[in-house]
Image 1: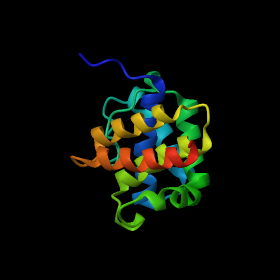
Image 2 (image 1 turned 120 degrees about the vertical axis):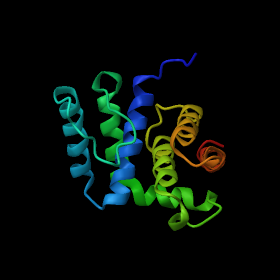
Image 3 (image 1 turned 180 degrees about the horizontal axis):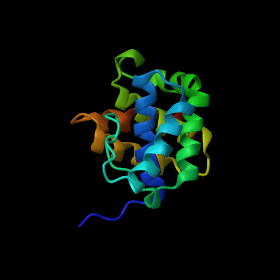
Image 4 (image 1 turned 90 degrees about the horizontal axis):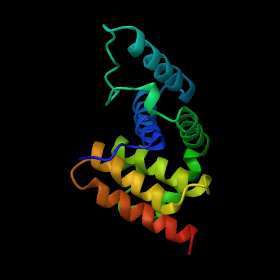
Length: 157
């Protein structure tokens, strides 16, 4: 039996999808956030609602830490260049060769590791690995784990 996911875990799941949408759509993060918030309320009130194709799972407002969802989106949007620089030395291939899902997961993990000291590094890494298991390619969780583990060690020797 699976253990229920925390509100923060769910926030990471939805943030991953929003960041993925940001990467592939070229829209602003504000527009992506508005679409997400709109889709939450539309899903709740409209049984005929069709989710946008980039939404990978259904949204349940009661099962998400909205403040943390906002914090992750804002953190990634504000610091993505610094996050890329922090990740680059630990990647086995150029950033441009990452899939959008891998890139988004690494941004979330790196954002938590570099910007949110209240999140234990082991939690940040584990949550990113779990996202990779849910949404990534077959062995992408191993890649995500390796990159974030090296980043964490460089930040917390």
